[in-house]
Image (tube, rainbow, N blue to C red; front, side, top):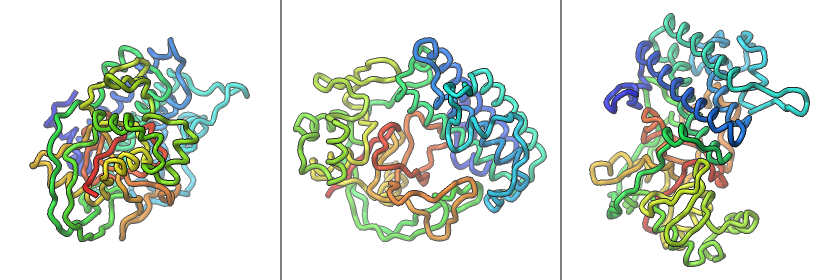
Length: 402
């Protein structure tokens, strides 16, 4: 495991990484993926290895092969034509098994799909191809675009895989070693951020993702923001006060969701009272009340804020505080965090060739990183787009004064 000062863990160094650093980082990411696969193979004895978990693992190899080994325009980077025909895959069933469309196999129709060994073999071959191409790649940002992208893509899917493993209630000793959960945090006073002008968007050099590119200047009024995400002690007060039964705390869409889902607490909570008991990776686990609340939908985050006479930060407020508040005690990185902003491409940015479609109208901006995020993913300008209903991921929230 690289030490904390290694360029392999530095989000800015990785986005500007040359061939040598990229080669090491790609192998590091793949080793982590393979450790997850081994943990899932162990869990298979009890629960069966679900197709969705295998798809997440095989998909990282498919993404590398599709945009590098099979892409004749890979040297053009973000300017490549995404609809040009591709070279054939080393695995004839790769597009069926691992494409963006998700698992496309059905054992009931005679297609059992890949097993763990087939996935492992595919990962080995595709990584070898990627590293071979990297040796002869140019040194410019366009030439290295898809190599850098493939690295961050694999890191993202490793985190997504962990959240789906929890949803599938898989567990085992190897998973326990890999996944430790959020760290309890001693409460700190909220921060007052003075009015200022702030620019959303990330400029080069190096890899600039489409959601992060472009620039938008925003005049931000003074605001107060929590120094850390809302914790279980704070959230259980809302539950104890009948928050899930109080129509006045919820938006119209949120109240309809609560009634339809029958929710009385966040996903995976088994018991509230004398602490919080949750189902976590195949185990019932009692949480510290100082851990950040997570697995909450946007509806739940907004309902808590309304109950507490607070509000969610906008994404520009979140980013400004994350960058400027670090020296004043603001902490982020234990959970990804909801904001009140919808996610749109910023002025001057173009949709990346690897995306099938722009963010949906209902997509909400989620910021930060979670305990399951690779260190090189922890960039304060990173932007994610999630549905307001998404509560499978390791997502929580912090609040601002109303």
